[in-house]
Every structure is written in C-alpha cells, then in structure tokens.
Length: 467
Image 1 (cartoon, rainbow, N blue to C red):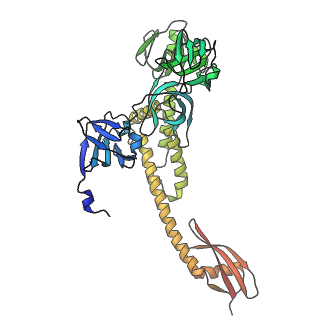
Image 2 (cartoon, one colour; image 1 turned 120 degrees about the horizontal axis):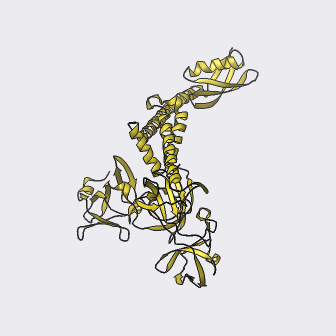
Image 3 (cartoon, one colour; image 1 turned 30 degrees about the vertical axis):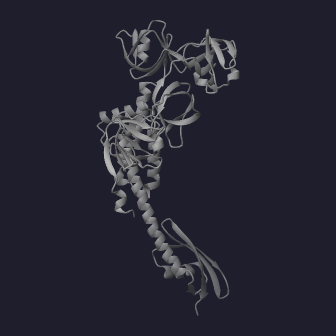
C-alpha cells in the first residue's frame, strides 16, 4: 500500500473552461493563460453520463471536441494529471476533424450494432459503428465520437457529371478545370448508380469518361466515374410539411415546388404523380431524395413507426424481473439478448419513435430502461447460478473424497447392489449414475458418476464380496 505521503502533494480542481484536449502536446488546455494539465496514455479517465460511469483512455478523447465538456482533475505539483473525471458532456465528445467518406456497405456487426464500411479520404477503408443512419453510396462528411462511432453526419451533394477532357500525370482536366490527383484521391465506379458503387483505380478513369468530383481547392479528393446523364442530387432529408394544395413540399425546412409532372418513386417504381397523389402517398417524417423533378422515397414514417412498435412489443413481452430465476435463465438470456440486438439495430429516428410510444402509452420506466433492468437482473441470476454451482461442486468434491480409495463391501457384483453400496458411502446429497462393474472372481473395479445439479465427477474404486 502506498504511503500517505504519496498523496500529500495532490490537488483536485474543477475544469469548467476547457479549451482543448491537445493531442500534439498531450495536455488539457484551459481558457486561463498558461494553465495546462499534462496527460499520458495511462492516466485513468472516467466519464459520467446520467449517473452511468464509463471508462476511457487519453487516446480516445485527445483531439476531440470539448464543447459543453466539464471535468475535474487530480494532479500533482508538476501538473501531471493522476485522475480525470469528465462530469458533463462525456457522451457528446466527438472528433474535431470532419472526415470525408463514401459508404460502401451497411450491416449489423457481431455486437448486434448497426455498422458501415466507409472509405475515408486521407484515411483508410474500415468498418465503423454508426451513431447516425447512412446508406450505401452516400458521400458524407462525418466525425468520430469517443466510442469511434460515426456521428455528426452531413450528406454531400455531388455536382452533375462532367466529361474528362484530358488526363495527365497527377491531373485530370474536367470542364475546363485542371484538378490535381494524388495517392490520397479516392476513385470509384458508379456507372450503374451509387447503390452499386465499386472500387476503382486512377487507371480506370480516361479521357471521354464522365465523372463527379469532390475537391478541396484544386485537389480532387474523390473521383466517381458515372453515367453521362448523372445529375446532382438537390436535396436529401426528412419531409417536414406540405402546402394545403400539395403543390409544395418542405424538406428539413426547405420548400420545393411540385407540379403535374413530378413523380414519387419507391424502390425504382413510380407510385404517384402530381400534387394530389404525391401528398396522398407521402407523409411528414418520410425520408426522401429530390433530384430534378423526381422525389425518391426512402424509409417512410410508417416503416419507422413499425420498427419501433416491434421493439416496443418485444421488450414488453420480456419476462418480468420478479419471475426471472435460475431455472429459466437460458430462455430469459436468449430473449433479452435478442431484444438488445433489435434495439441496437434501430436508427436514431426509430429510437425517437420508440420514445414517443413510451410517452404515448405512459410506459414507465421507458423501454430502454426496462431492457437495461432486465439485463441487470439476468446478470444477478447468472451470479446466483455460479454460486449454486460452486456449492454443488463442494458437495461433489466431498463425495468423491469419501468414495475414492474406499473398498465397497457387497453381497454380489450386480449394478443395483453396487449402487446402493456407493450411496451408503457418499450420502444422499449427490446422485449416483452410470454404475459400471468390471466383474472379477472376488473383487471388481467399479466406475460411477456422482452428480449434483450440473456438476459431475467420474470416480473409480474397488468392490469385493463381503464374507
């Protein structure tokens, strides 16, 4: 144990004015001039969110946004931090870097969480957990939060297709503009549409091809080979309202006109045309993409509500915590883990819809809180099972000790006779199974299984004919 003197020079102070988690110098900078607190990779860090405590590493949070973050530090005379507690804003810590990425695939990972494979400019192609909803083919700006989840997503509008008029070493001429390309430039082939996007190489882009470019200055970050007639996507978002006559639609606060030739498309098929029919088939809360005079319907408000309702019902059907016990553990565990997987797969919009269901139906505690409570109860039951198993192991061990090395006195080598002799030695707390007798003239080798609960032991001893 450390001597009290080891802690004499330590001080604790709240930090309500954090300016930066500096990754270049490994320090916490405050708004106060010349006040820095020095961190290391081994500094213990905990974060508190709504009473829940989580741990983190300096590598997880350095360089991340400190907006609305408050903390307390325990530090020594050298201003080396010995312990950091993030008291506010831990759940909102996100990277300050806006990453440019292309979503190549979405899936449910091994933890049951929504995830995506994303190619990142000036980074790498990797799998990321999602804190927000994205789809295959999306071109996005995003940040990574403290859990390395994709968050702060902004869809990027790509310009209409333009012809490559010249190709040089390290450059592409497109519509009279010369763009530099380098080893960091991302290339993709989306000639069959962004939903069918494939990897490509610089050598796949040639004079006469049509491409969409995302650039910073004159440096091409992203080059996507597309069909000649590919045009810019004007708007992607959530329907937030309609005009009374249906001749205008509001998407995330922006208004777009609808005329007799405007089409509403779902899964590649036109399902409505013109203001009246589109208004009839479109609802506030639906996700849409507007391109030219076509409204493509994505996830609908109805589908969002249905997904939320399914999870709401599933959690409601889980066993009551008072009825969860050792005997039902396996079934309870399977049901609760499945519900957690389904809850984790909900999009942010679906989780909002689930919260609305809780409020509408006055479900208290909420669905998420109920699920967490059942998981905690399940963990308690697992501990009880472990304790019970440990006690059963002690009983079996004691029975083994009694039987091992004992010579059983029996009237004959009949299995039932030998079993009774074994029970006399080990007592009634264990069961005796699988009695095997290796017959001999006056002596026999006996093998039995002693069991209590799920604990078993195979024991071999000797039996002989009593005189």
